Length: 111
Length: 114
Image (cartoon, rainbow over the protein chains, first blue to last red):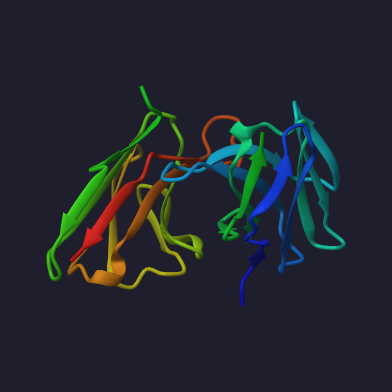
């Protein structure tokens, strides 16, 4: 049973559009949530962390957390071709002692 | 200089050989992690350590061992490598002063077992 689920994609959006990436998790007591960007052959790079219900904005990125529905999402506004990458969702369990990663959603931003 | 470094970056080895992957960090973090990444499977936790004297198994620890030589160094060993251990291996760190639980990854080691 997978702890963290993501649609593998690919998700294709035109340049300038909003990309919406979603993630669901199974453990109701999850406490911390993260979005990472990973370019092919490179290491994951932290984009956002969110710990409380609601929205958190950082530049073109907005993370949204809904603990009651057990999902977390990432919105990328004004998508650029350089945003083309795989986006990994990570969830912290067990009082921050363990982290589970989704398998990632591949995003293609077309010029 | 990179905050989290891994050596070697690429390694090809034969079945049955012992191999060590090394990770060093200058972030001052107390927590360190080893993950492997396989296509379509995402990142899976092998071992994690919260300090030099605290080492814990992750979800896929069989066939691996670790050593935390210092706060800044965490090594992963494959005692007898097998082909299905071919993967991309990442070290990560978290914690430190004003600790958050965000993890920061090293550049990765691409390991091929023939």
